[in-house]
Amino acid sequence: MAMNPNTAKWLNFFVCIAASVVIIGALFKLQHWPGADVALILGLSVEALIFFVYAFVPDSSAPAPAAGGVVVAGSPTLAKMDKMLEEADITPANLSRLSDNFSKLGTTVDKMRDISDVVAATGDYTAKTREAANAIGSVTQAYTNAAAAVSTFNNASESTRNFHEQVQSMTKNLASSMLSTNWNCRIPITT
Image 1 (cartoon, rainbow, N blue to C red):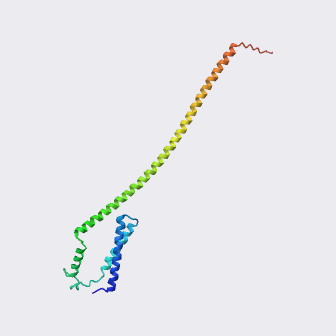
Image 2 (cartoon, rainbow, N blue to C red):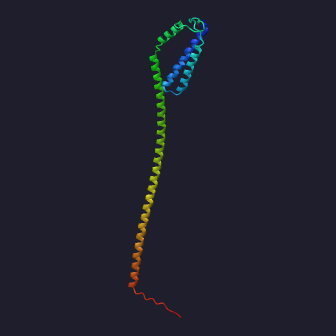
Image 3 (cartoon, helix red, strand yellow):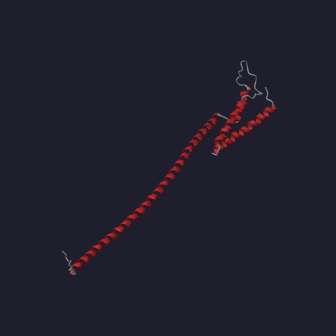
């Protein structure tokens, strides 16, 4: 059964547009651009839709199925598929390399997640270090103020001691002066 040429034209248009979405999604992911996850999910979803649609496309060169609906081995459809895979250079070795590359991509994405955790932790550490430095500055200022108060107290204590010594000296001088002058004070006694 052959496909309508107009349908084939639109199907080909849809496949080309969808393939470009897949390629752009892969480009976004490889370049780590914002929205890469969405672009890749969209591209791979479109690719899956293409395969789904192609499941219902009749192959005009396919022979009629044999009795029981089984296609005979070595049919032109299988030969066409083999030729198409060969032209696209899709070999088991290339598929293995593709699988390895996807594994490496997954590892790289995991490492990037670890790096983002380290960057966040470094930011937290920097903030805590700034807070500690500010606290140390406050403690240093308080210590400076306390040292100034102690110094003032020591100066006041020294001044008090000097004053005390001067008062004692003056008291001795006064007592000595009073003894050296004869003060005969008589107090009249009245009865």
